[in-house]
Structure formats: structure tokens, C-alpha cells
Image (tube, rainbow, N blue to C red):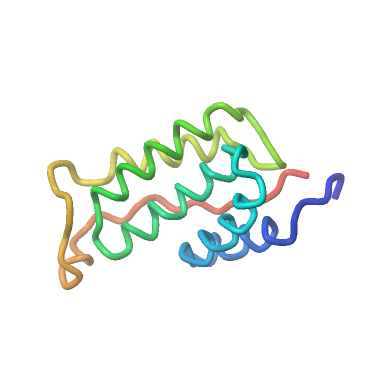
Length: 126
């Protein structure tokens, strides 16, 4: 690897690809708390929170967090910290299209009726 990143950043990739978005949030929040001006980390954090919200039917929270993530991350295009942000931005835009409009919350018992969000596997380009 050409660059060393914080341990939590490497762990974020593992947990994201496993679909453990709650842990992604925790990992990124720990890093972000050390550098609150880092909007790249905040954008990844918001995207993780959005995916976690979707997993339990909070569509309003999902939309809000995805839009905020998009806003933060687009400033770091095309690549930052070894991450292809064109891929991530495209993913966020696909998710925003897939999330049903006009519904803020779905009961947990009906979550399986929600459309599946597109898959995304993150990896370091370094």
C-alpha cells in the first residue's frame, strides 16, 4: 500500500462489505470526532447511517442522510483516501432513486416489501 490510513478506516471497508452499517457508523464516528472538519469521513458516516436506517424501515432518515452524504462526498471527487468516489456517488444516486417516495416509515414487519438497494462493494485503490 502506498499510504497508511487509520486502522478504523480499513475496518470500515470490511464492515461495509459485510453489510454491518451500524459498526461502520461507530468506526467512522471515532475518526470523525478527532477531525470534525473532515467532511469526507462525515459523508461516509452519513451514507452508513442511511443504510442502517433503511434496514429498519426509516425511509425519511435514509433519504435525508443519503442527500447529506452526497453533498459532502461530491466535493472529494473523483478519488480520495484511495476510494473511488465516482462509484460511491453513483451508488448514492441509485439508492435515492430506489427509495420509495411519499413514505417516511415502514413497519418492521413490512420491511421485506421495500425494494432492495443496489449492491456496493468498497475497496481501496491504493
